[in-house]
Length: 342
Ligand SMILES: CC(C)(COP(=O)(O)OP(=O)(O)OC[C@H]1O[C@@H](n2cnc3c(N)ncnc32)[C@H](O)[C@@H]1OP(=O)(O)O)[C@@H](O)C(=O)NCCC(=O)NCCS
Image: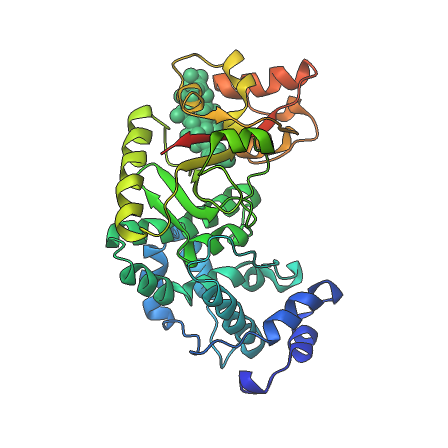
């Protein structure tokens, strides 16, 4: 059956998508893209996946279930429309797009579904980058976060797949860029999912002035897991960001870089050396009042999981020991928001 003859109900039935997918499917049914989706044949897909940073061991698995409109019409129906939703949000760093994982019963193919969606969106994202003068190396380094997320999936679950698909919406809508050590997300304060979740109160925002107000342009700062977070690497990255956004996106005039992270928990400084990269990174930021008092984010970023008991956790580094000691002493780790003047 050609994908154009399929309906959301038939797709749901054949792929075993229960009622929890209903709103998503309804939205997708209205989202046929202007141009059809295409994926390279498996013989060329390996090179594409390699450019997207997908490691050798995962590429073999992804190619094993590489879809086409002919062999997988229902999955293709979803790929086309999910790509359509990403295209509709191109350049909008405040967009909120639902991206549910497919049911576990679909196995490897279901786990790779969002890899297919993004692989089918590469040309669109590359075109957008080209139109804004994004240098080729920045463009590919940014999109290669896909492979990094697939690597993290393997490390966390022991299988090939992608389950942080919501994060990659930013990359494939041209809203985030990897510039040296850090990534920078163009957004507007309080206009989308980036929030930030914690911020000064209204009087303080008034005092701080332009750049701090709801709707003001800002750059969300993110720290991928790529080796150490040296001060020199961060300085260079921030300098690159100033130059890059002025040249490629001059309309996005951000005064502030914002960061919401476990890395900004000031309690870390009680355990780590003052010369540690994390502590030096913290010193760049003004902290907003408020915090999420919840150790889970810290545990996930440091140990890849939230254990039943901290006794299960490895104790190799100063940070690993600190995380466990603090929790054993009755403490809770925090996620906090900070800002830096760009
Ligand atoms: C952010 C990051 C690069 C910092 O690493 P770094 O530059 O080595 O940081 P520091 O110099 O402050 O490290 C201080 C100590 O903590 C250890 N450490 C730092 N990050 C660690 C991690 N993720 N897991 C285990 N130990 C870690 C270091 O080995 C060092 O201990 P040691 O002196 O016993 O060797 C690293 O934590 C990382 O890659 N995290 C994952 C990405 C992330 O969390 N991003 C933010 C998402 S909100």
